[in-house]
Image: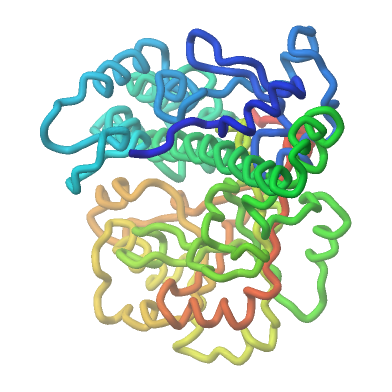
Length: 456
């Protein structure tokens, strides 16, 4: 049976004494200080004072309301469902059949188990003919409302600044992805709480009075422990001098990838060393693969900022990072065809490979070389997988299917590494030791929004 409490009891007790959390409400939620949300929150909200009373007017901006349990009605509201949709789903979950597939909260019987996040997505994001993917904003609005998503959720997806990126996928995709990002954010809060609880336990073993003294004066010593949940994440943020310096390192190719922090799970060991670079793989189908997962990076840091800001807009409480890897240019230069391929629109091979891949269809043998490549450098496509299936032929792929983001007039370029051994080995040898994850803080996102007004 899964442990579904968000805050560990011993951690919650200390936070309560410190005035950093309040008691669980009758609705099943509680307010937690933003600097105690997850492993990056101490740095992300370091400008926020700790000594703000919960009953003060300023507390509204300093404390975040979170569910007390990962499996709850309040979690359904947290991920973005309307009251009526959350009530509907909570009733289904609470009145689960006693036979057949079990819920994660049921006693284990060795059979199939459904997890709460899978249940939410499966009963909310039902891909159908109304899963809008054209440029009709009203159709998008209607579709998202039909899913039972609340207004804040919908506004995050429909944000005008990210219209070009939104139209690269369907309403179904963005609804599903946003729910998953928000749910992973709750797991991040849960993981940070358990890290603090472990630190408390270690302190108690050395000093029986440590818990009471920590509640009075040791806030910083315990808060530092929450960073252990993601040891590979830098203490320096995206706009720090350290991060900026990496954009201009001579002799290397610098690549970027923005994602929610929870996606880093398994990437690092306890010391912060990269041990599983596969954690950065993207799912299939994708531009250059119909079935295999691949690594996608952008060479443009402003494009990475754009993607990071979009995640922040869709899931404000979630921590976002921008992954930076640096590969010696000599290592790229040593790759020869067919290990390296360059494929740009309007090349017929680009059209044919993207058309087949996005449809989830195996490309013809004439394109086999691209499936064997370690690295493909090429143009980024847009529009949904389903829309490619609507085309009669790859010859129908035109310039309206090129992704242009971050104010660019030219299509985006992507560096795509094989998700098989050859790509994993190349990145492990040439990029893993230089990999850095810089948090993209809320203040940095706010600055980005101020500098990039929507173009109506």
